[in-house]
Image: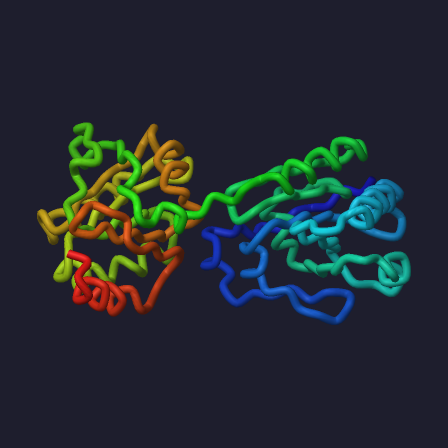
Length: 298
């Protein structure tokens, strides 16, 4: 068993903080960071060749994968360095071996011990097994991930928006009645750089339709500065901008809207139906809204 020290690198927001980052593999390929946000993954953090527990875990994964005929789980090993000894010990493994010298992935999953196995699916499923674990426990989690159906916000299109519960900037409770028809729902986090960048489009968007800014904190309290900025935005745009603070209702609202990352935008049409969703920052959002609204969305 080997202790792995985590680097002080934090993934601030999916697809944003390290956009364009890619990892080399011992096989000579590249795996872009963005690929890890698609589909289902099993990452086994190992060191070699002196870690016997790592060899055991790799053997279990090899046996499991050899039994699969149609698994949609992508398996990869993650190592913190590339040495001749490591290459020799891992020669012939049937998985990509990701080299993570900056310990980006190790920091993301808070890995401290090798082997550690992280199983995840597009931000909607996240399980971490830290050694010691058994082959039965590993297989059980792999089976659970196989059966997991990834919730996608696109599946909500064509239906009315789920219930929206929160408070306004004065602390008054508000619900779905705050959403006009049509409107753009903007799921926003103050700690998300891409969300803040997207605020620059509000001038153009609010000329087209009202915006409901749905504020989540991802486990952090809103600071006085955050609240001051939100009040300034409300003062600037008036009734063209509704602000909803999710507070204690954050998890239930995020789950019902199937929010995987921020920013996420939904277009609610004039009939109160979810017509379009954008996940992540979009440079073409205003243009697409113009085209959709001109095509009869209101």
